[in-house]
Length: 175
Ligand SMILES: [Zn+2]
Image 1 (cartoon, protein in one colour):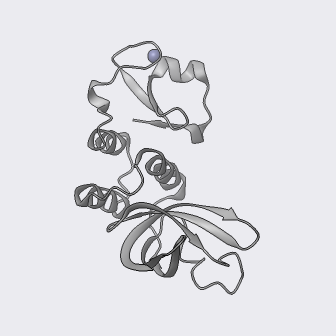
Image 2 (cartoon, helix red, strand yellow; image 1 turned 120 degrees about the horizontal axis):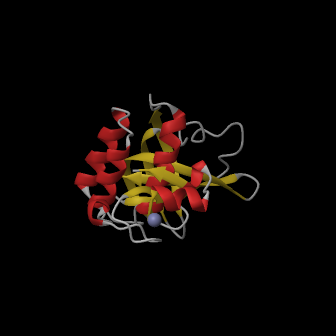
Image 3 (cartoon, protein in one colour; image 1 turned 180 degrees about the vertical axis):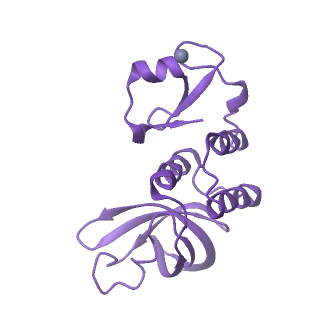
């Protein structure tokens, strides 16, 4: 059994069975991890209120046969949920699992603490991860004026192609 204490940002959570959840957290020490929270759907759970998307958390992660989030303390984000949730979903899509990077950690925590969630932030993170938004062409028509990033297909699109594809607001971000 290995134990880690780390800071993290909760990106998403999903139900697992009747009582448990899988929480995806971008952590300082371990990069992106998907951790099980046992019985977190019970009303008496001590961790469930803390492990909400957007929260900055300090937590204990135990790796055994599974990876489990045990104890957590949280601070709620002050950003508008309408702008924060797509950003979290975006991070969940583009950050590879288990890679740590102190610079990316600083960039993301600063972005969230300042609620600086504009298109330039998305571009900065994509560039950082090597997606190279500034040199990218629209993957559909090859135009050199990308304006959107599709979360479902992980690809860049120009304004025209994005409107032709008619993606739902949760499937696309402006960059
Ligand atoms: Zn296009």
